[in-house]
Image 1 (tube, rainbow, N blue to C red):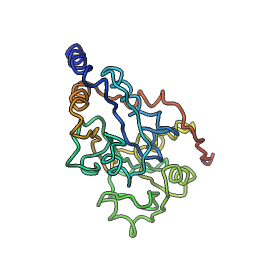
Image 2 (cartoon, rainbow, N blue to C red; image 1 turned 135 degrees about the vertical axis):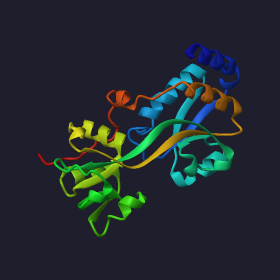
Image 3 (cartoon, helix red, strand yellow; image 1 turned 60 degrees about the vertical axis):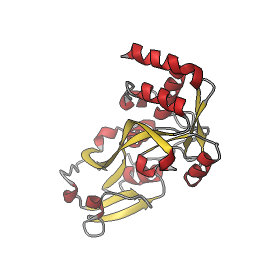
Length: 246
């Protein structure tokens, strides 16, 4: 299977090598998938670097505010983005390759709390302001759960680790990455409850036929071991400062 992929990549390398895969990423970063001042670190960065090496192309992430991503595609500032097809900019003009990985928003609980379902949740919960959560969770808020809003994941994690809330909902890889940096055991807080799960695709402009063909060939056989990659990722350029209670 791998030999077949190399043959396909070699076939396309002549037409692809003169092109560049310019992937837009939020200028605020997306821990631990892409981050750093130049968006040059992370799980997706490592994966794209491997693809670029095999396909013989240049590839990189371009920091871009989300509200300007459609503009960037139209102006030729970028030609790709990682997203779910439902939220992809210019969806009718993008070809979705993948899915390349699955995003999961997991419920985390203080030690000693292990709810069997979302119907068991009582007390307080830390969530991201402006985020949309599942209906089953939203139904609990206000009557059984008091909500504490945060503006970003680091603030929410700080509130949770300092026991300002009983529960928190975060992307499971983001939670594991941040707690690793803080030398906190993430397994103390993990539950079996998933609030949301959706596949992530690499969206490439349909006009980039050679890049699409090369990406389809690569990701058809490439799998991402996020847990293994997580242990090797470098820290962010900006210091993570959260002091949990001892």
